[in-house]
Length: 93
Image 1 (cartoon, rainbow, N blue to C red):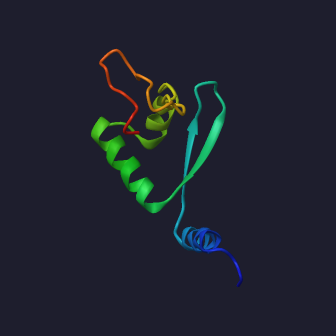
Image 2: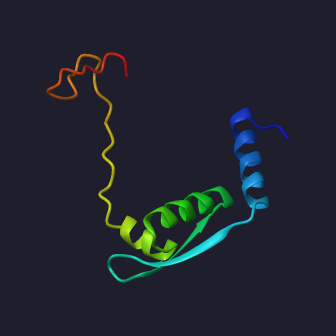
């Protein structure tokens, strides 16, 4: 196949993921919508470990996770911009 390396890597990853066993986690979103999230084997192991540590089920963990605030992304900043009042500069970003 005559494709750029990046495209070949993408296709290889798709095939790899499709060969793995997927798990479906049913849960209810904070607005009451029923959801089904498909996770990989490694993700379900981590999800189970977190749920067990909190002594709740996967369904409840996903419901509670829906209430977590969205993580902020730092937008592109110029090389001289201060990020916060602590004096951290973006020169090394």
